[in-house]
Structure formats: C-alpha cells, structure tokens
Length: 74
Ligand SMILES: [Zn+2]
Image (cartoon, rainbow, N blue to C red; front, side):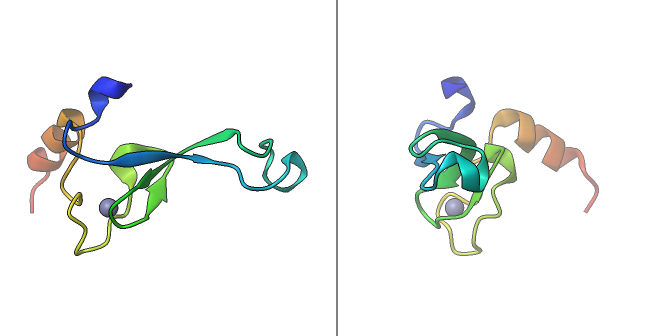
C-alpha cells in the first residue's frame, strides 16, 4: 500500500474517536479512511479524496488514477 502513495504527499490514517457502539470501530482503531493532511478531506480510497480546490495535494494521485483520468474525454 505504501507504494501507492506519491512520495511527496502527506496522508494520515483516520482512527476511530468513538466507541464500537457508535461506528463499529473500537476507539483508536483505524477506520480504513485516509485523510489528506493538507486540506483535511478524507475518503475510503486515497484516490477518491475530495480535495479542496486550493489543496496542495489535489493532484497527488496514484499512477493508476492518473492514467484513468487522462483517458477520460473532457
Ligand atoms: Zn487535500
């Protein structure tokens, strides 16, 4: 998984801040979500993080995502 991250970007694994009764995760347990350390947005997949328009890491995607994006018309 580490290889999927661009080397010059900062992301953080989100850990549950509530009990297992609230969100199904024990407190402190990773939820599987990844948060962008630049704009604070998060998603289950690093390529699907809805970065803010002014986020420095907005275009820091994996090669896989970039390839798909560039193939899409418009
Ligand atoms: Zn971001």
